[in-house]
Length: 375
Image 1 (tube, rainbow, N blue to C red):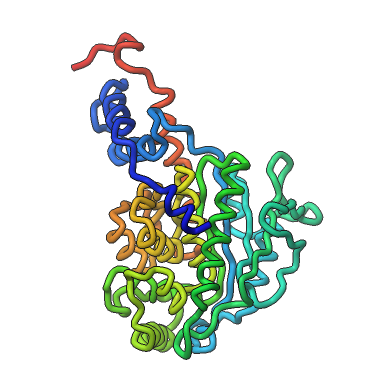
Image 2: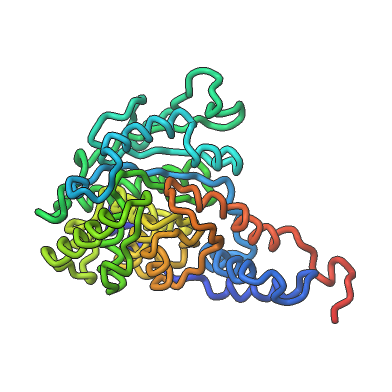
């Protein structure tokens, strides 16, 4: 599956991009007046191979959830059971990502790829997923007309191993997690998603994210390791040292992306990388969220360089590794609000901007058609 997916990922369609640039120049507005939105619309035309490209609607959020063995090193004060508890909260519709998804009309799919405790919700496998309906008229309940969040169980193993002691995953486990992400992307595209939105949940997951970003950017761990949930100075220093120790122990080679994932990655990072690859293979845009998504994007692009054409950076996370990763990928973030929550929240806030960039090509009149004089 992985090899077939990689083979399906290709370059942008230059003729579609040229057509989009030409169309932008004929619309009833001063040339360049929509700034970065114009180049975004051109990129999305190149991805789709059509001008105008399809409207990137509806949005489908996939939240990949997993636990981490490195939690034992004291990199976060949050207990590990919060991962499973938050999965239950997503399914009940009570998290921030649910609120933003309701605002944008996005669907929410939670994928258990490696949660240690059993999430408190019905479980299904990819291709057999069914909605989980919140009980009672709680504030987080899904209103009529929107699909309820659902859970897919695709557990590769119950959390990664401690990367400071041994490889976090075997190579086979890393591949299996990547292929989970590919299958989820395929399923959501088959269901009609116009854009895929990355989400993540895993207590301690900014530590392996920092390790992945350090490998693929060549940056020092201190430059790409952030405070995650807002840890104190002592915990932050420990976190940087944990990343440094893991990299020194394994010496992962960025030319071997699966090997990097196995050494220092998390199951949700691997699945997110597959999700990105699956979207790129289907020529469907993928809207990136925060630092874990950026770490996964670096991995995906290391596996398939042309996958970068499918990527849109939703926001600039407050985590320093996200900025370093986006700079390496050459992706300007759409919004910068100091967010560091994860879940897909920043990406969902950016989604209307992405949709608007494409809608301009569909709906704005040209000077000729509107009878408007040019300068």
